[in-house]
Each structure stands twice: as C-alpha cells, then as structure tokens.
Length: 154
Image (cartoon, rainbow, N blue to C red; front, top):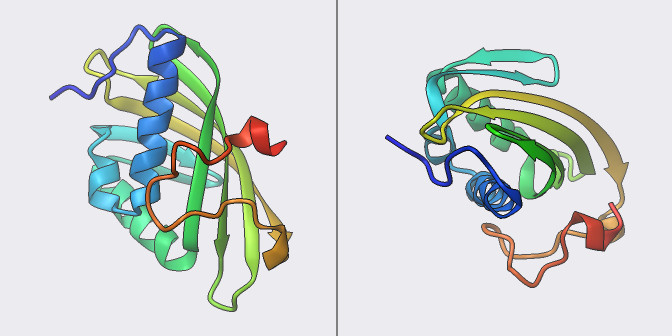
C-alpha cells in the first residue's frame, strides 16, 4: 500500500503531504488518520511513546475526546529526501469550556511507499480567551481561503 505523495519530497510534494495530514487530523477520525502510518510506526507525542497503528488509534480517540472543537493548521518548515519538518497550531477547548492554542513542531520520516515510519512531536499549550481564537471554520477540513499560520502571524 502506498500513500501519495512518496519520497523524495520537493517543496510542492512536502506541502501537499502536510496539507493531507492536516485534513486527516481535522477529520478527527482515528482510523482514517492511522492509515497514513506504517503498521509499526513509532511516535513520541509530548512525553508519550507509541508504537503501531493500534496504539495510535487509541491515543487519538482519547485525544479528541479531551480536546473538543479541535481545529488544526500545519505548515512545512523544512524537508529533505524522505523527511519533513512541520510546525503547527491547533485550537480546542476542554470539558469546562477553557480554550487553548497548542503550538508545536513535528519531525516526520517516511518509508518508500509514503507511509510515516516515525513522528516526533513537541507541543506547548497556551490558554486563550474565546475572543482570541483565530481558527474559525466548520468542523472538518480547513477551507482553502482560511489564512495559514504565517498569514495569521503564528
């Protein structure tokens, strides 16, 4: 099974890979998201270490139960051969209604079929007031005309 685009990446294919990942994550469908990773994919997400699609699905299921009204934007920072570095931000609120903007960086490594072998994510959470939110679109894919991170000054 391959997952286009495949390495080696150029500026266009790296940007497409990041947008496809953003779209999948904004679906908040753990099963769909997990298909982009190798069956034995290794993750570090904050201080959690995961291995394989089963653990990824479980992790994402818990994540999106906790992080409500989740909306994500990813942007390529750098790329080389079979690796892409992205920066991202997402907004969400907890069960009490407190809003957050989470900022982070991810390092991705892909196999020859375009599946992600490794994902290393560092993330920081910022408390925000509802009027400070910048990500306004209906749940799901970010519209093409919605500003990206750089355009938002993030």
